[in-house]
Length: 220
Image (cartoon, rainbow, N blue to C red; front, side, top):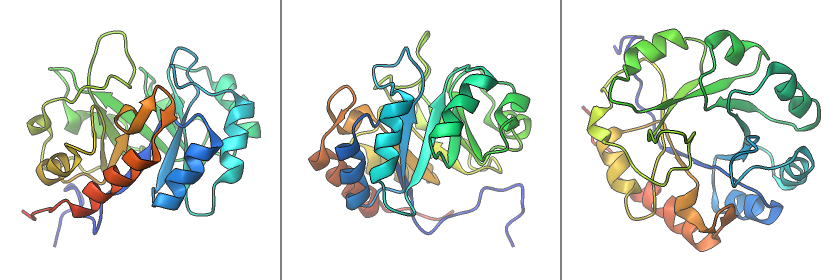
């Protein structure tokens, strides 16, 4: 029997498309079979959305597509203002948030970990014990996601006790290899399925999902 401290294996890899800025892109992603869409509430991002724009995106989504709100070092009252209007299912924290802030709104949350050389994922899993998952992203100084670059996947330990979401430089060309090597719970893509920053390409999304489904995950 698998110990609780070990990472479980899942029947399939979930797909999240982050940085959605237009309702038509959200609807296309949903029709193509994504599990979640990400809305960026970080003004410095080229994929940031207003509360009004986020509502328009959420309104077109069918049931069972998870709506994730991404924040970077946001004050609690700023997050509260978003939650009062936008029907988010999960919060994603991409900055230097303390565990207490991540749990403040009593919503399921994902904590992003930028993969610096000194990162200890097992320690991060313990520190953010209330997180639903850890999202692993490429470290680039001054950037909080959306780097377009992959990190060294061999640095991911076999077991962390948390579901892991792989991000950072994923594209239709490399996502199958990434999955086969890391066996994540989910993959998260933004720039890799765009025609321009914040503008998603339905053809690239379809190709990305196809490659995810075709990836061969070897147990053990």
